[in-house]
Length: 86
Image (cartoon, rainbow, N blue to C red; front, side, top):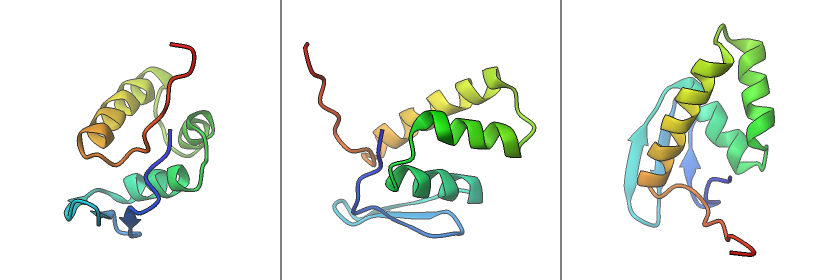
């Protein structure tokens, strides 16, 4: 899963999609995750880093991650992923 390359992010959580003109405001953690995703860091690595740095259970992180992905999809911020073999 990757964030579209044209998406602009800032350290304070501001996100801008120049293709649509939409902007969003998130927190500092959202900004760090978005930057990692833009740089091609995979989901497993991002989650492992969060688990190391924050006091959160795997179950809670998984729930929060699913909500996060839904928000990214709804905001049209994710690269289109092609399914092979379907």
